[in-house]
Image 1 (cartoon, rainbow, N blue to C red):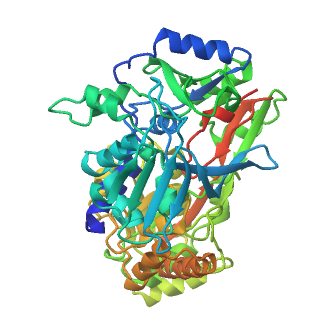
Image 2 (cartoon, rainbow, N blue to C red):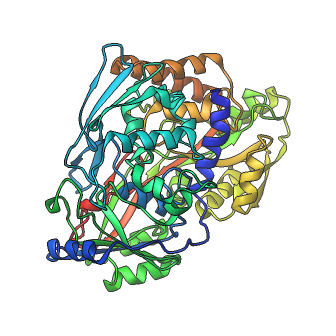
Length: 546
């Protein structure tokens, strides 16, 4: 499979699906009363955690794009073969490490050539209907991912060397073997993605139709959970209730709560009021401008988590005047980066100074050249490029993202000082996406974080010649070679050197204005704990408690 095709479908849809909200789906079938009752008896002494979310769950079909809240749900409904090991840091935040432990698989073996992964499944694992989780179920999950309508088949060849279902074999009920066509340093990361969590073969076959052979319609609003939670109430646009899966193999001691309630509260001020009043335990999406005031409330606590999501303004190297590197460097010199950090994200974050944000392994700032740059230097570069009087350009911005709108005004002000007139072209998200997807926009605002939190993913999606989401149209075969090596080489020292080479190449090319990477600030009632940062950025419910 050509990687260009993979990126056309996977990367562009992934970015855009995560920032859209959709119409609410039909209510799924609730678990049987007996199952719900069993959960209540086992965990009656544990607290209920109420989380106010700013966007709705559109659906819970595991292998289709969905909203952020939808991904939060499925992260807790389905169990992949492996999962990140996590530890509690000094701030009380669970941090996923760069080490994987068994989840659906108790143990696994890797052949000496790195091509064959043999997973030995847990015999005690069961779905929410009480049926065992077997190798046939994981085989069905991979079959569905490779041959179904979802997007997972588009990342498996590149990052895990899997192109056909023939490479996945059921050895026996509790042994699954995967034979890759290339070794990959990213395989375990991919096998730990929630989108490859065990789906019940029996359930899929029961709900399949000739028009829908993978039972996607049923799974949009239903789940026979292999993971730690089940959905017991679904009220679109209002509330979703998640309770412990009574058949989950870890047992009741695994849970810090009796249930987690996701309450849909789109208005930020309402979320703040509910949190202050004690009507909810956690509020997502509190605006940064409000956080400092709220921090004075003794009844609240705030968890600040550094995330490697890089916000940037991209410059298309195929479009004048950005086809000249001196123009790109001049523009980069004219931006007041600290003012953006101070006034757009109110100090909750920093300038990343690299496409590999701080918090992603191998991040470095050593190649950043713009500290101390002067406007005179920028003007001289413009003159050298043939623009002594500057130029005029439109900057494409998604109008719903207030932070990016604010950052655009700082870019506008900075570039005005070197004679560049920036017109802010604010567009609704759908139109913004359509315009960006033409690859014809000379100047645009964008952001990126790669699931897996690895430099190979980050550079692939943004700097590979044929990557669909390489909207700056940067292309250098040497970068492609670095990316190819990062995918297959596992030695940490070699990977770090390759990463630094790639970061230097990207920063030197000056195709991005590196604006900010914002912290993830979670507001909670005092005494609420268990928040975490994992490489897919989604909430793991089991640790939440108070």
